[in-house]
Image 1: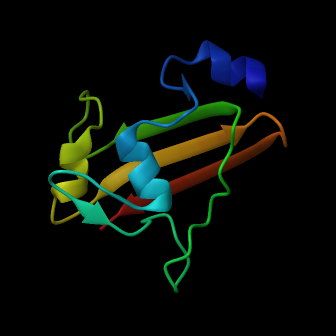
Image 2: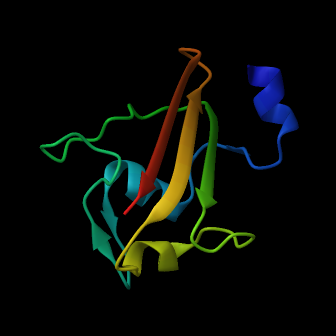
Length: 98
């Protein structure tokens, strides 16, 4: 799996971008404040943090555009996010379309 991830330009090395981090674990910025969107029914993050690996964030609402902080201030979400933890060889993958 690691070779496939490294060969795909959509995957970037950790740490995640500010936007990807906010989706996974929650966060605040100049224009947004969000709880983790990749969470269980009680708002707890589903994806364990990783120190080494790769992540991918696809903004399906604005195809062809790199997902930036504007994604977090929209009234609806349409994205796919993945995180590969190379230490545990674990792939977490999540899709949200509201």
